[in-house]
Image (cartoon, rainbow, N blue to C red; front, top):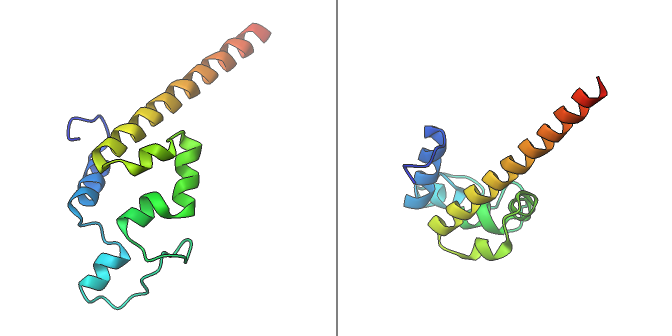
Length: 110
């Protein structure tokens, strides 16, 4: 993970998630912080790392739009990270191809 070409704050975020130190509601409640435990987005389940990244309907919608298959959401965390970055790389590559086609089209019109 540390070799990935991503911003340091993103690496730190993933590290926090992997070691269980991300301040989700379930962790804060364990530390006796007086807060509501439900997910603040969907209000359906307790907020945990698993819920925030995989189970919350908004998270599932985001992964679907990014092209991350549901089967990837059932793997271990490192496999999931690889799938996410592969999908994002593919998304970025497709976006660059579309941009290149648009530039060629505009130049051809001039």
